Length: 99
Image (cartoon, rainbow, N blue to C red; front, side):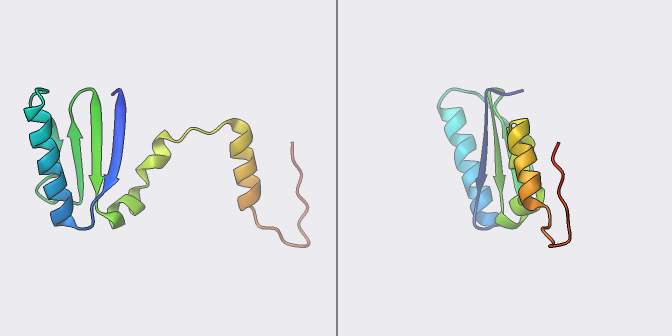
């Protein structure tokens, strides 16, 4: 696990790659050593792992597809029940029972 997780988007593969390269240099220059990196050649989804911080850089389409933020979303059981109820179809013939 990490102390912090950052999820960010770039506008294109070039933007994601340039952002990742800039972050990797800044991490090294700040004295945090060499971070582990995955996905840089394709730059659709780049993961940078510094040990304490994990950074995910996405192209917008890839970020929308994976919806990684949902993995770490925190909702109380009451909020989850309310969200499910709000998303349920409301047909005039339907009877909703809560419990």
